[in-house]
Length: 183
Image 1 (tube, rainbow, N blue to C red):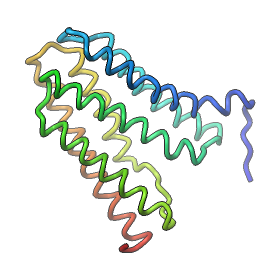
Image 2 (image 1 turned 30 degrees about the vertical axis):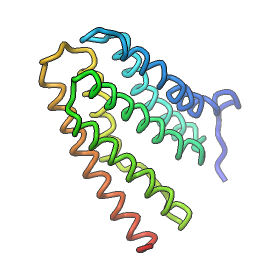
Image 3 (image 1 turned 120 degrees about the vertical axis):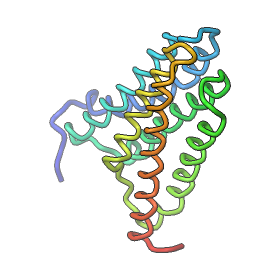
């Protein structure tokens, strides 16, 4: 068994960052309700959430303090933050309803699927494509939030992230079916 070379308070930091991301979701939603087309406060908070996503995973792996909680909560925090942003951007008229629906449906399928396959022995590991999709979604959504209405390039980047997220979801399904078989 490998042990961590960091102190107990530092070992808790990756999970603390994940919990902070979960706690910041309602704050983010509140900031999104501000009547500001280029909403820098919400965009900066969303960007900080994206950065903590990278930092917590990096630290957990580097310090060898990965946990079952982190394996579940980290992707869940990402999905919930991105889902909240997709909903708020739809409500704000910045992305189409079907864009928000695709993001929410993909995440719902992944969450429901997770509940079925993990108890059957599936070891969920975020794929490189899944990480890339999440990075692009965080970046593109942040750019949509902080740019004025009518600026199209962040929305196109968002669609690229959605496409990668859908491909990653298919990869997860194929891997799960291979590892645990059909239900």
